[in-house]
Length: 220
Image (tube, rainbow, N blue to C red; front, side):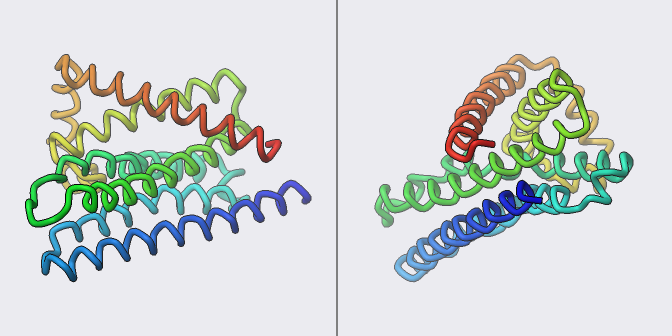
């Protein structure tokens, strides 16, 4: 019970942090829209909304004893979570839109996109941390590590599908045949392999550094 209350207190702090970051992102976006009379970067709102989905799913699974104890519900929820997880880190790729507007200071757009990106990244990292805790309750240490590594590299592959092939999470239902065919084709393309390996390793290193820092400071 004490451990559960401890995690609930951590969750409250997370909510405050993410609420503050989100409000800051929206404030920057509104300032830019007011000054430039352009709503170009408003797509970041949708991207940030998608980044919140895996975090909310992990929070739900963490607090639902029923979904954790029933294997079918637990695995099904984890698969849905994994489907949306790339959206959290996808925001980092939105830096490609910077420097397209000469009437806007480069530094402002940099801060704007960086604010959205770091919020999405934090949502993703904390979400994975929660899922890792859940996985460790039901699987061995070795199995948990294998699943964690797989999650991070599959996330990197999903980011490639989204940024370069323009697939979305819901294409698994709306356009499954094309999605599956593209995934199979991508497996044999060196650029895709390099991106997945490189970005996946980047996520891996960043996650373990973050997880180690959190564990050290919170003794969990």
